Image 1: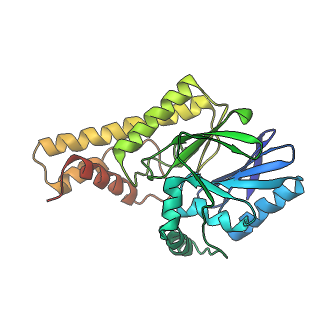
Image 2: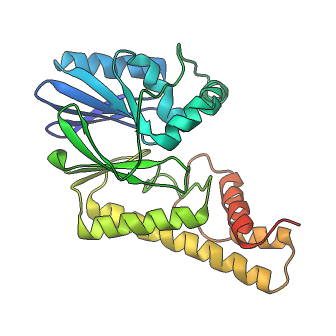
Image 3: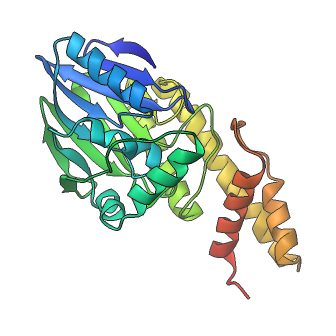
Length: 277
């Protein structure tokens, strides 16, 4: 676990797994954590570092309910876990807990507790959490429950699993929604840039760097749709259409991509272009 103070009041912790980001926002001795992760020793290190700095954790926020972003909630049982209504629904359904156990085990990890949701919000609402006001925005596409956080006191934009330098877009829900999210992020970064943009994986970015990533990712998703739509129009088989999508160049490599992630993107895009037969 590495810790970098991005600016006074803003600490970024990086997990050894996928360079996953956890944040500690603090002021006046009070701290709010975002996505504490991943392994039990790393979570203990975050808690220990916060305590060593004389900070009291007042709340934990999560960006979305994927297992690597909610597995650490158990480590802070005395404070509210705050998330979007969609993320809370995934937890209430049992899906998030099942994925924590199953997908964590794939990485040789386990935890003492299960994810929980104590307070929920609808993205678009402003939240007062500890000493900070969080402006929230919906970030669907990667999942259907993603939320971003703009914290003006720290000149911070927290975007969950978007705008990563070490991943290309992983579309688990909707390419159309992912494109809309990237377009909204481009607009925000152009009109209301934040000094610190923190993706869920990989280092923090400047607004200019984040905008470059957003534009490249959006161009990829448009190219994916265009290539597959053209293949459909030519009378290609479904397998050929998917192959056309997989062949579209991604904006950057992902460390554990064996082709399946690009295949998943293409299959999702095809489901949005043509009904299954």
